[in-house]
Image (tube, rainbow, N blue to C red; front, side):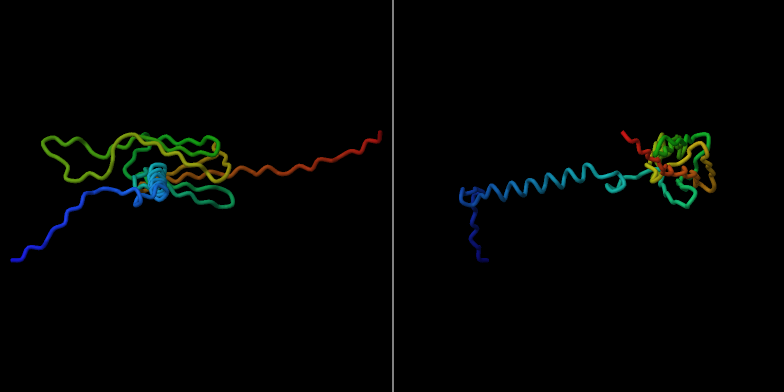
Length: 158
């Protein structure tokens, strides 16, 4: 069996091979990539966001639907403040196992709070909420938009 020659070279960088500008640009790109991953929203990073929310609108109201399977109404707190709707509560997904263990547990237990900015001004005092088959639907009437006032101008001679 013929043995091929193995050439081992030291991992050294010659000064003429090093391009500081190229390396700084590469470092900047990597820093930008890392910072974009850090500051992305949880939904874009792949984290679970609970509850899932859909907001739609009609001419008279906003409809907010939140998926809250297995929740008890007494464990929910819903509030509107300005242009922000907050849904918070406590979710208990299972009892402690005595003498056993979970093979898979994909539903989290504990407190949650989800605040979403609403796309229009609403009248929170007239809000109505229903809970059917694990879906909370909140109807938020839109506020009457401020109507422009005409201001008469008086001409004063002087």
